[in-house]
Length: 544
Ligand code: TEU
Image (cartoon, rainbow, N blue to C red):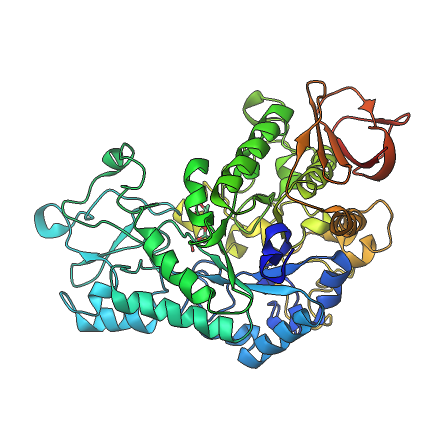
């Protein structure tokens, strides 16, 4: 690919900085920790790193509540540490993507503090969304909208006014009709682009622009509006914001890339992926796809068609910092009495009533990984998936951090189970996450089984998940040519695709073994049985 097009088929590795590696022993991962582990990323063979927020934050939402978009949280480092990390990654041709959170600020942000101080009707308050309440005394929220984390999307201030927060109360929504809000984010993007950042992941890209004309519609009315006319999600007008961003990105050489996080229906996703918009959008369809051939085939076909229409490439995601890790998802055997049901709901954590067959989950996760990595487009990996980590269920209520847990009274376990600090070694003090045994304990507790899934343990083990990922990424680099894919007719329960140059990928979702396609066997997600591909297994073959 041309230098400007690096993202079209990139493998991007998501770092959740607080949980990647702790360089200074405070139990919190930091930017120096990333810099000190660049060798891991090089050995893995990724093209880019996406860092979840590392900005100053009170951590009401894992760092997605930002006090200052142009600085580094002191416990994670400083701007000099950021520059050193970027230089270390760039020295190995690994690109850097940072997370931009434009829908809301934290309630500690100077703008929200100024809005509180300035009072009702002020220009400062107009940067956010303040309304008076309904009912006698205005003691009912202005609308029945709900926060994504549970509870009302409105919080009342002591002065009687309510403000909007589609997420936690500590994350007030900005008013994107304001020119100063738009300009401030353009300055933030330029700030990071000038520091050499290669791209941006745009948090809830669909939510920024709102129609807050009175009276505010209730939820039932919102469910029936036509595409592009919802009061606060995926309005057509949000694209005007991204057109301005694109103009800024294209002033750089090479142009900066961006990927939209937009939980919108597949047919609306292309709007964010067009070259005049952000250019790429996450496809989250595999997060809710059950492990079966027809669903995977439909998701793959639909997304390849949609990305071709938009001029972008598809993206593929099996895990991120918001969802149950996929080896656990694929191991759920008894949800609602349905064998193989995925039982996945974003952010719900592991339901204590479901059974997880870890061997089954690990096997399917490996098969899913090889299938995903054989598809045209770009793959987003989440830290720890290369180790085959499962969701961590062993976290006491008192140690949990995620607002989804607290705001739902514990009915949703939340996302802490996929954010536990990584095991680098098998030393139980912190599994190598922090520098020495005297370090503060990791900010989320690590389970004893991390010893078996550490980088040190898996390194050099022929059968480990880490070895599989390394081999797959190296081969993918060698084999990828073009963005086309052809389906090879196969029996039900089997998906067989071939890429340009004769790169075959076959996944057996069915119960009975099937023959390996003719040619040179390059890689298998698990052992073959009598020379055939057994259930829940993927093979890569260079066609004869
Ligand atoms: O997530 C947006 C999003 O839609 C998620 O809220 C998802 O539905 C949720 O995780 C399930 O509970 C982004 C970030 O990825 C997430 O970490 C943030 O909490 C959220 O935005 C708010 O900034």
